[in-house]
Amino acid sequence: MNIHTDGARHRDDAERIILASIDEFVAIRRDLHQYPELSFQEGRTSKLVAKYLSSYSYEVVEGVGGYGVVATLRRGPGGRRIGIRADIDALPIEEATNLAYSSRNPGVMHACGHDGHTTILLAAARYLAEHGKFSGTLTLIFQPAEEVGAGARKMIQDRLFERFPVDAVFGLHNWPGVTAGQFGFVEGPAMASVDQALIRIIGRGGHGAAPHETVDPVLASASFITALQSIVARNVDPLEMAVLTVGSIHGGSASNVIPESVELKLTARAYCEAVRDKLEERVPALARAQAESFGAQAEVKYRRGFPAVINHPEETRFARRVAEEIFPAEQVANDFRPRTASEDFAYMLQARPGSYLFVGNGDSAALHSPQYDFKDEIIAPAARFWVGLAEAFLS
Image (cartoon, rainbow, N blue to C red; front, side, top):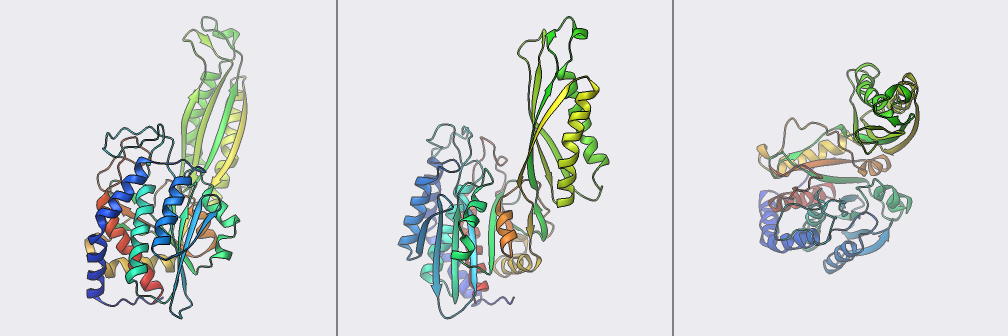
């Protein structure tokens, strides 16, 4: 791939034009933030996105894989085709930011910045429609249901890439703790796979004063949780990555009663499919063995989530070079490392070449926190990157 731009003047014009309308896009982002919608419920959001894209003269198709919206802009005789994706759904979290534009939907919040991702792509869409210099097909993908790991797959099952062919597909995510507006690129594994296990350890309940007459599932569960990390320490290659997290444990309701059972929920993450397979083998086996050692039993339901995000090297290097052309050196991170969170854009990268990149969100609270706040200051640089990437790819 060769990068071609029209020089610094065009890049300066792009920045100036995007910034000239930034207040409009900040208002769009905050409107989306006030009316967040959960996965599979993104009706208002998708209608709003489609309305803006239609006003920018895109060919717009709604209802792709649910509430997905796909917009196409063709220009010139060029045959190359690029896809750029933004996610649109929110999380079941009660917002605690006390911002003037806080969520008005109780128990629902844009705590991951998808309102920002959507706005970034809308800002880039408008610029490219009005001023973009390219020859080829630009396809913008607004994906629902990322938070439950279903939206990308549903869009693909709805023949996304057959109906809207692309030669490569790109996406981005904001990242707290990284300098606002700084870009990060990772070749190969960039985010982890995620699988879930629901484990029920069944004993025999009784009075807390007579534990010898019971089979204590709390004790068995505690032993299992402690032993769980032996999988990472002793069953996984030390040069590979694995994360096992017990995020929920429930059992009993009184301090003097040993319950009949304890329920645990955990996630398993990896970059490598072989490690992922090993975790799926060892977690249930360890749960059953630990339970049995206490005279209890373990029921295990292990459910595969979505795979690791594996960035294609050529497309990732291309995206990085575009960023280096557009931004000062300090705005492109030299040592950005893979993240162990998960992202269903992985399915799109299995279907087509491409890359998933990151843009810093400054000192905001963590993703999925009730205090999280997307930084509006990153809308302009991220939109400018999408503009540069599209024009370079379709030059």
